[in-house]
Image (cartoon, rainbow, N blue to C red; front, side, top):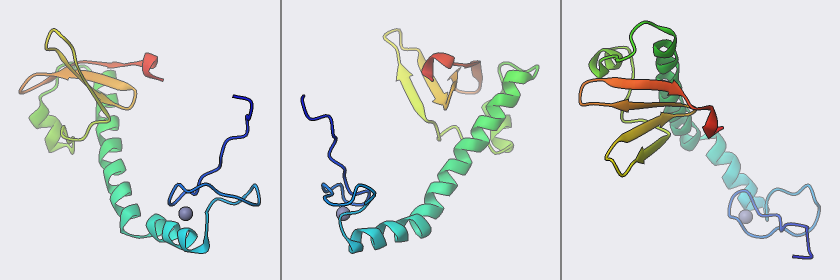
Length: 123
Ligand SMILES: [Zn+2]
């Protein structure tokens, strides 16, 4: 590769952008569409999902700091934990499953979480 300058792409549609180096969109319509996405229902949905993940994260942090290292999922759920929202998942050959919420990982049985730990190697 001799050309180090990367092609800039429209934030909305991904088309290559030509012209001024500070342009973020290929055209005015894309700029409007992007703005609408960022302020409309897509933004609300994103904030809702992120809020759920963040609540999970804070609950897992409490578990890291607390005495209960194998909390019951039902009890966590009563406090707002949503086990169906994760940021990562890995299944090992052994069948062991590891779940992630940002930089915290855990394993789970039907009823409980266990081996909750920070995973700095993910960062
Ligand atoms: Zn565009």
